Length: 347
Image (tube, rainbow, N blue to C red; front, side):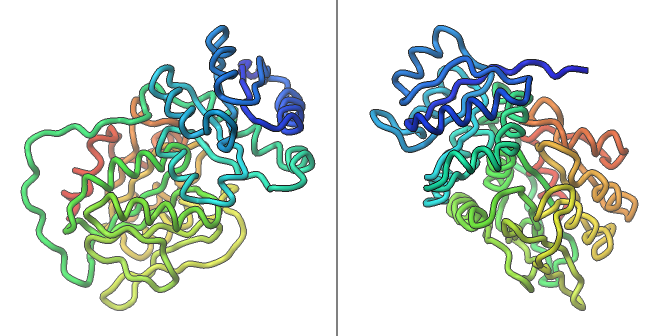
């Protein structure tokens, strides 16, 4: 069955990059580049005539920077945006700002050899565009937290951290995790997180969340304890698994082959949680493309853990949660606004 056609508009101040991206994207057979522009001012004028399915956007451009343009798109005409920019390599904080503003994904490009890079690594860009086209930005970006009656106080867990939470997510997960973690109090169960993200970006991501949250959010290091009120984020480019150390839980951070095309992999974390924590764990799989984590969540459920999949209506990409549901790995589906309450009650 042929893929549905995807219309793309490219905004980049480099003519070489615009030409190389156009050639690589259109080579897939299902993507039409309906326009290009050297800056956001020109882009908005042309896009208003024929609006694309996906925008491929640089961040560092004349007259208007990419972040400002991205925010304008999301405010006036929410559209999937894929960032392809050298700014993401030089400044991970800029990456976090782009993702927080609503970008579906960010692909760093080198400062030299751009044409060759696009030719060699263009498959990742094509995949990102296809994922973006299938995303649900109009409903999922900036999901508000539903405020209801206050939850009853959650008793602080003992330092042995008998109950833990494991979360796995990918595309759209940076925004979704912000919604969930900022709603948690400092006495929530300890949390271990795998968010598919390139190396060096997870430190900035964790730092940003730590500044926004009542709980502590840190990039995990090998041997870190899973503690009440702390969320450990697997470092980009490395796997993370849970281990029992006497009466304590600790994480092991290690190198290894890609699992389900990812490192860190959600399945690696979830399978280790099934073995180490069993029924004392809560497993949550959220928005993301592909099936990483679905089998691991099933392992957790079969080991007695309570398992939750984010529902379709609030998932930016209903891929990973859907695969988990199809496998029978989830005890329930829940909207994004309800997940923080599920975590608090797990304590």
